[in-house]
Length: 97
Image (cartoon, rainbow, N blue to C red; front, side, top):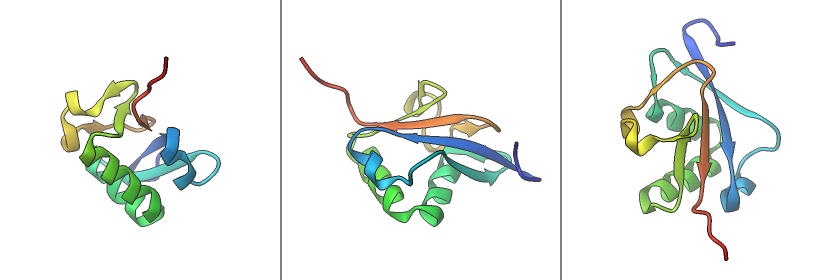
């Protein structure tokens, strides 16, 4: 699972921001104990274009971040604790009719 002293988080990206992510599974390793902001920092180093799109989307409210299916905003925002093996999904609003 995680490298010594770190935790691995699986990143999933959906909607219009998906084209900014590399193909295939995207995992980042963050320090332990880890927080949501650590994942964003790791993405900034690893995939800067994706990071920029995610941060812009999160700040504007266009993108939601779900940690294991629960919105990060309701779990502690940037300070939300992350655990080894967590899945973090970034999605734009869903609409249709």
